[in-house]
Length: 307
Length: 65
Image (cartoon, rainbow over all chains, first blue to last red; front, top):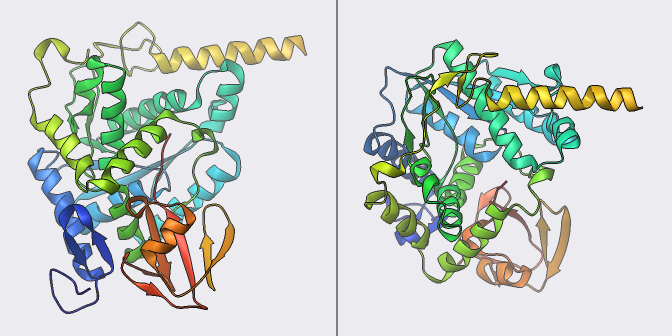
């Protein structure tokens, strides 16, 4: 089938939800337009602002960094080495290789330097890795953005991530988490930097196709700790519907975002003070990250004593 | 036979050729919306036919955690 846009070349990417097939060149144009549209539609940032992109070595974050640079934005990448054996080693290599190609210097944070790698933390606390990992990453990205003078932190969350998160929040009736689904989370007076999700209009399939066509060498293997994650079950359910009814995921997510679902009294509580230890925004005197760090250190010391 | 390399699982399968990409995906239990099929690095649409004796790579696009 020929490309719908140019009509000249053989179609390489078929998108049922758009009832269209694109050749590789036209797909790149289509994809960048989708990202650009999300940035302007949700007023994520302006060309004058400085963006910190959270990169993991996976397809979404590297594609996001790539697109933002090609669209002419001032975007730096930041990678957190989680210390998860070969997975982290390979991911880090992918980030460094990409940065070299784009002649950028990524910010690297190594959790082993403070004894807070994911294997160390989960071994000490026996809590779910994904939620701990999310909290640790949020802390470091926000902290680095503030110190580096960035206006905005951009993550590679795509349409599938956001739709599956919404499905989970609805199934659990976690109404208080609805505001967190917005593609833009504004900065707070207590020091939370604005957070944006420029890939919200594109699916995982589209992001992977973009990476493959652009020759972006990304980490194709998943984090070993993500096995059995509930988000994967929600994605599976939505993809079953998408196979039968193309466009379901987009209608589900954007119907929600366009709707009247964000009541004033459901606003996510903003973190209103500064942590006494690190100075980052916090609900309590000491932020959740510093409390976690202290707990890990305490248990490590107790373990050494008992050995 | 068509050689199907399932990249993330590091395994190879053989299915009778020729076959359309959509049929290959059905055969291996994968979805069109979450799987990219490549031949020599080029992405194939579900309607494309793969000839007997050819090799394709299958890549899942689902990430999570």
